[in-house]
Image (cartoon, rainbow, N blue to C red; front, top):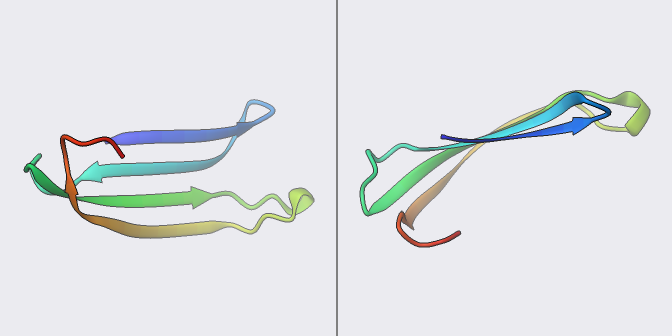
Length: 62
């Protein structure tokens, strides 16, 4: 699983995760989830979104 965390002034405000759901097959499907905390002073609403990347050749770059 890959994890990316976004910080503002050392405070985590968002996170994205992507994980292989195909047992590391040559052609793989990945589940992606993005979570963002609310920050009213920056006009950002809380979000929690899940999606898929289907049929990606695992050994190729993004």
